[in-house]
Figure (tube, one colour):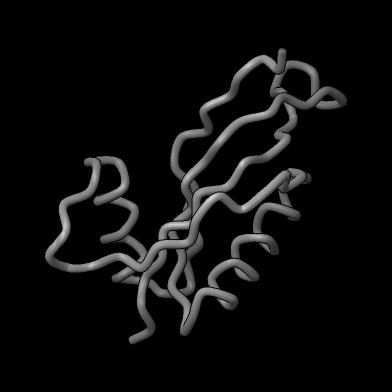
Length: 98
């Protein structure tokens, strides 16, 4: 089985009420991949399907079994472990630019 990765990305995401407008935010995405590049590539492909624009990839971190993660991330990690084809998004945290 390929390793599981947490990819922290800054994005411009469409606003649900106003789909023509976007808001910047950060999101963790969980994906299984052979290496950092493949993880980032898989995440980019999924986010493009949602019409999200990636501003930057903040970090790509391999999930370590001995580490403890936030409850919401743990659930996503378990789901990806059960089905490595999944690329799962956690909560989008938006902010207003200055």
